[in-house]
Amino acid sequence: MAESKKAGAFTEEERDAMKERAKESRRASKGASGERDLLEKIAEMDEADRTIAERVHAIVTETAPELAPKTWYGQPAWAKDGKVVVFFQAASKFKTRYAALGFSEDANLDDGSMWPTSFALASLTAADEKRITELVKKAVG
Image (spheres, one colour):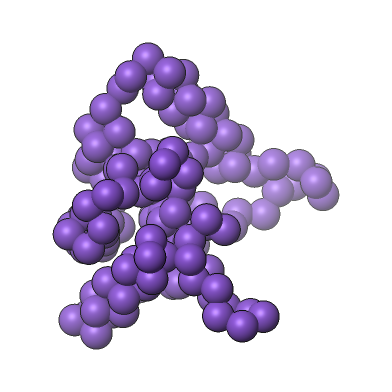
């Protein structure tokens, strides 16, 4: 994440994400299309992020069609019963060196007393896609 100039101050990227979240809430209350919004956000991404996000979207929708596509803090996400379970964060969003695939506390990934909830994605291999499929299945199971 980009560093803020004052300790405790939000970065410009963080403020933008909060504004996006407020817009999403307003649009949802008006019955906006979550999938259309998600696809628009993916289309706005740079090529590297867009390529990964498009594939993640395909994997999630094929693996768990019961998850509703939407945006969350201006990024692609998939929800069950209105609660985000899986989300994607473009590397360019916070100027990081990799994109991220994350799972919220509503995902069923619990494994003992400690488990990962976010994964760095620099690219996607066939093995990565298989692992994402397994994680999504477990998250919604």
